[in-house]
Length: 259
Image (cartoon, rainbow, N blue to C red; front, side, top):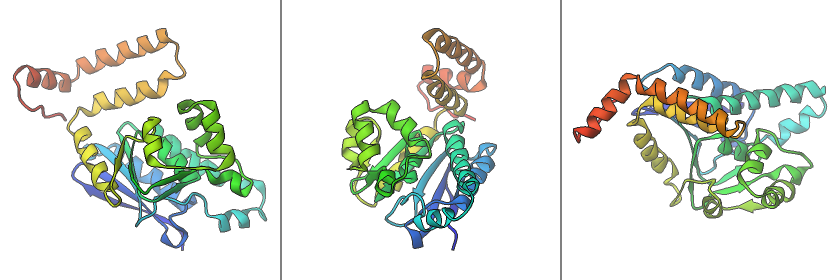
């Protein structure tokens, strides 16, 4: 049975659940395509202001399906290249998505599952979560942007350790390193992620979209380039109706209502 993405909503938050329990929520082309389709559908829906990605049951995601990968070794290299392109398109859609995306992690997040977590804007992880870049254990190298994210977020020695040795790392150490936002009791990651989403949902969507774009662009910009981008976004947001609402609400000590 091919894996699937189950989409449900909680208030203004879309919950995308990776569902492939037979293979520990392993990823595959059907899941990549469904993830992209779900984000595309929600992007233009003003009733959806944030997205939470989680796994079915007590496992976030075991990464790639090794049986499928073994079968792909008997196919032309283009078959696996196309599969990875699907994963990378999903990763890129998450990174560039104009609304906040939160990973809610219970249990293992391995291989491409770890890469998927790193693509999100926020990470809420249960205390029993386990993160591992397991590629080298089966003589493979990373995909899904895992090497890109870890090399930028961590010292070279630690990124090398995680990627080359396949060592497991827990959520509390990742929290100390700045890669996990919140650590929760087991079974509470989704609930805590939804609380964070509610906080974000109460803020102006256009401002959050600008902030996400600025963060994404910062690493590739010089200071002067980033200053120019900040100026453009600030002026555009100031002249949006939401800024008028936000400033008036602050001055009059009331709760703003953004559209």
